[in-house]
Length: 252
Picture 1 (cartoon, rainbow, N blue to C red):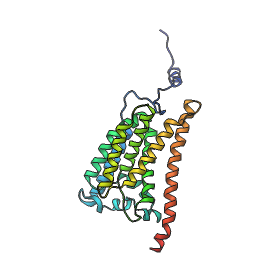
Picture 2 (cartoon, one colour; picture 1 turned 120 degrees about the vertical axis):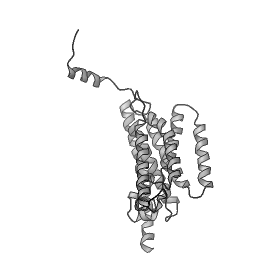
Picture 3 (cartoon, rainbow, N blue to C red; picture 1 turned 180 degrees about the horizontal axis):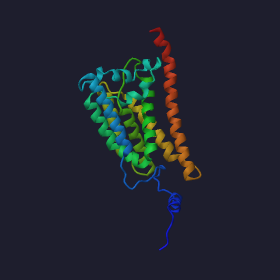
């Protein structure tokens, strides 16, 4: 029997194109939603830290909770960690459980289609979109926390994926509509954070799935540019709103 050197076999393996999903993500034999699990674990860890600081599941008195909750006027004062940090805070075990269950159900399929890196990018961009909407449309003194803006972004992503697959997005749109109604009807839920995340997640996913180049590699690159563009727009809106609120903070 003929034999091949190890380097030759490795070189041959590298030359074989890897199977990819329609979004350009690597198609995996075992589709374990690693990023979804990691994001869930991070949210649970942050909740555990705030609960430990508070001495119980009523974690709002935690110093970390107070330091990370999204308050537009405090962001305008330069406390920018709140923009992302607030998306990993949850006010109580029920709030955490509802968001983590939704993330698990919705995130697995989105991660499978988008691929791990693009999925994580869409999640974070949706979080930024939710924060931008809160900055502009919520009261400057009202605190907002939770991953639901990013989860709404994944709902938007799922709707776009179904359209790209030429399947009906109506079931997802119904879920979105019901959640919007609940956001309006139940006090204390951030409607604008949800809608901002929804818009950003849908736009970022559309950039990945519908912006195409002359070849697969160029299409993937353009998709990344699209995600970055949505993220930069959200950051620009946050910065602009912070600039308009800064004089208010000084006067106050």
